[in-house]
Each structure stands twice: as structure tokens, then as C-alpha cells.
Amino acid sequence: QSVLTQPPSASGTPGQRVTISCSGSNSNVGTNSVFWFQQLPGTAPKILIYNSFHRASGVPDRFSGSRSGTSASLAISGLQSEDEADYYCAAWDESLNAFVVFGGGTKLTVV
Amino acid sequence: QVQLVQSGAEVKKPGASVNVSCKTSGYTFTGYYIHWVRQAPGQGLEWVGRISPNSGGTNYAQKFQGRVTMTRDTSSSTAYMELRGLTSDDTAVYYCARNNYGVFGPDYWGQGALVTVSS
Image 1 (spheres, chains in turn cyan, purple):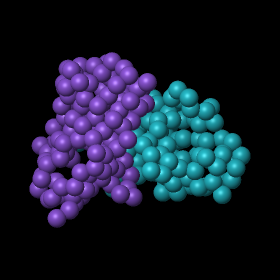
Image 2 (tube, rainbow over the protein chains, first blue to last red):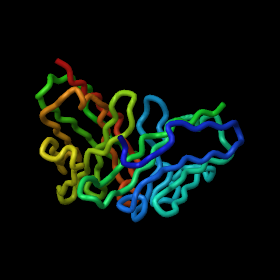
Image 3 (cartoon, chains in turn yellow, brown):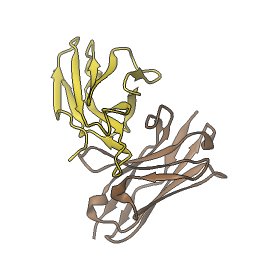
Image 4 (spheres, rainbow over the protein chains, first blue to last red):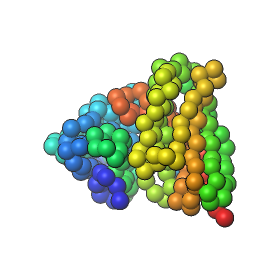
């Protein structure tokens, strides 16, 4: 059971805009930065968004992050077939039990 | 160019320990935290902990407290993660990653080291 909650799956057609949500609590998403990762099959994760809104170097501006209260979202516009991957959110957690917590991941399918 | 090269796959028996290395190159080793993240087969990502190569200071996820030790060797720019008391639940790919963005924004990752725990 992951600390952050993501939908297990999402889908879209080429050119469409999709959003992936990440729900947490006041000890993580509500007060700390959120990070988004993309993981293609058999490869290490790749950071997309850091500090909730900022794109990492080399990440297309089709990817954007937002945060409101204890929820965050990753939006992908102009969906492309190569965007089909697993997406994970993560956040720093101020509770005594954790420093970095992850969502369970969302499998994005481009149909 | 920045590289993180991890040690190879390991097969361990329950109760044993494993030591995974992460040799870095192409940047100033002491300038960036190293995080360790694991992924069980078909499962999501799980943060294990981090080490400051500069000070040697560490932070571990509570789940691994008492079972994990992260160290570094600045002379060889290598980070290490030792996990003790292995169970089948520890079977996973273990990644090291260099932090560059905020508190948890790794930009370069190792290739991963598969640790299999089986009797």
C-alpha cells in the first residue's frame, strides 16, 4: 500500500491531453515538493518534474506539473505513442516514518 | 559524461546480506547526494535511503532502519548499500541515483542490480 495514491491506469489517443493525479496528505504533498518520474519497460526511472512544477532538463514542455492542497497532477499534452510508460509521483514526507514516499504508479496507454 | 555503474546481479539465501556498489564518474562525487531506490518484480518504486558523499551522513526509510547501511568511498567515487537479514520480500532491482533537483530529483541513475533472495 503506497503512501501516495495514483490511479493504476490511464489512457489517451495521440494528440490528446491526459492528466494523472497523485493524492497525499499534509505531511507530504500538502507541504513539500512533488516529483514525477517516467519509467519505460526495463529501464531506470527518468525524472520529469521536480519541486512540483519545474521540468527537468531536456523534458518537453508537453509535460507539466501542478499542485493544489494535498493533491498533485501531471499533465501530458499532445500525447505521443512514446509516452506510453509507467508514471510515478513522489514527495518528501515530514512524518517520522519516511523521508521519500512514492505513489503506486500509473500505467499510461496510448491507444 | 556522468555515469553510475552498479555491481552485478546477486542471488542470496534468506538471512544473508548483500552489498551493492555504485561507482560514479564524470562529476564531483562529493557534490551530490546518492539515493537508493528499489523495485520488486512487477511492482512500484520504493525509496530505501540516501547518503551524502561529502559528509557520509545518511537517512534511511524507517522500514529499513537497522537492516541497511549506506557508505561511500570518496577515493574511488563509489557508494555502497548493504542490506542484511534478507527475505524473499527483498527480491528487487536496486538502483542508485544521483540527486540534482531539490530533495529528491535524481537526474542520473545506475543500471540497476537485481538481488534475488531464494532458498
